[in-house]
Each structure stands twice: as structure tokens, then as C-alpha cells.
Image (cartoon, rainbow, N blue to C red; front, side):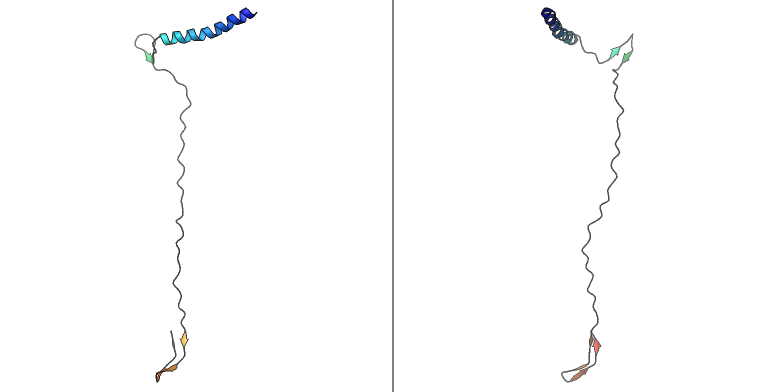
Length: 93
């Protein structure tokens, strides 16, 4: 039984090595020729390319502007008075 397993393991190691040697001994051909003048490229089976749409543009609002309204001037009534001997009637400032 042991002799059979040893022979099998030697054969399992030797066959791939011999196959690799035979493959490297022959010249590599990228095109397969059938008959006279017919050349076919190698056939590659792959899924179709997937198209990813670009993401939609994103709107970023501009930063708020520090806007301070002009101060509102409320008119103030100044009553009439005497200034250096002259009468100044009442008025709004």
C-alpha cells in the first residue's frame, strides 16, 4: 500500500512539471489559424463594461453676508430756548 502511494505522489508531482516543460518548449501563438488564410483572435468572455453616471452637481449656498442695517435716526423734539440772548424756536433734530 505504501509503495502505491509513493508512486502516485511521484506521478502527481511529475505530470505538472512535464506539462509545464512542454508548454514552454512550443512557441506562443496569439492567433489561432484554421485552414488557409483564416485567423481568429483569442475569444475573451467578460461581462460588459459598467457605466457609472457622474454624481449630480451639488449646490452650495454662499455664506451669509454680515449685513447690519444703517441706524434709524428718530427725530427728537428740542423745545424753544434762549441762546446767548436770542430766542431759538422749538424744532426737531
